[in-house]
Image (cartoon, protein in one colour):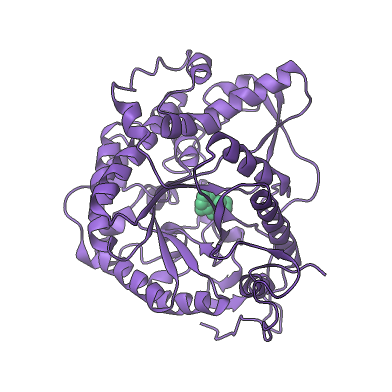
Length: 475
Ligand code: GCO
């Protein structure tokens, strides 16, 4: 690691309550986020077996450049140094995910202690450095053997997930205060089984809808297991990438297009999880794909097991109108009725529009729909064309601008009565960006993948100042 003091040289006088600017509430959780397959590497160590991403990344043409997560940011071997980086940044919380294939190879049977040991060490290291661990149980890396048995479209996968949750909770439950069952089940279902851009790469609208339901069931089943297994103080959560949707115009047709996407992207998770029901309009919209008979009696009671908070991942909004989209599109048939228009304005290296209002809109919508549920922004960040210059510095002013705008939106939401408890910047490190391989850099710490050298980017120093100040500077 590069020993860089990322803390601002002089933070005295800018502590909460003493300076000017946009202050966040006392106790606000300032975090960074990563996921197992994107950073750990060590793909075959200590008994780990392949996940669907190990398999998918080896399929020709699926991942940019044929990149895989075999080595990634080599975090498994560099974890203590990476924790030191976070300590230097001053983060209060770290959101990581557990690799199912590492702790329960094949997805069945007893835990492998050598696999769990890595997470025990990580959690101990975090706690020793005053950083709160936030564990996500599933960030898209299903053990391949469970995919071979049918994957998320099969009901049994939800039961397997509850069993796995139990193994991890037994190992880490005394030391991890916050637990997230699933990360972005929309991606797992619709990119994994709908348009095949993500692992396991299947293309079936029916499989995507079945997967979505089984993700909800897995979430609820695991939430029950966690509630039984964990101390009563534990926080149990779910992370969704709710889509911030805007109609292209206010015509009835465009508003109906928004309704369709809202059903198949947002309410397909929100309604079963928070209201114990399936959206009736979704059932009608998808009648040509399925009669939903895979939803059994009692399922919606499981999916709506009460949880303590909701995590929101937000990057950019979508502009929707009546029309039709080029296929394959991951919308379970809605693409025949809906078109997407690129939003105006600046773009990130992902070609995603930069629009912080979408985050404000999502947060205030959730305040209105679920007024008593605490929220966390569990991912927000941006990829840009970063490089380490000859002096070994990485200047990323666009990322700072992006982060500032989005934190300003979070602040505005809090002022307007939204109970946002924390913000987790995606991502701590440059990493394996799924089908983009290593070609997109989301980190606030640059990783040279050949040498594994870490270089703190300007945005990391900026974030350290924000954390030290407890908010955003305004001159
Ligand atoms: C996501 C993912 C991350 C991505 C990030 C940028 O949950 O979408 O959690 O793994 O890397 O969103 O695309």
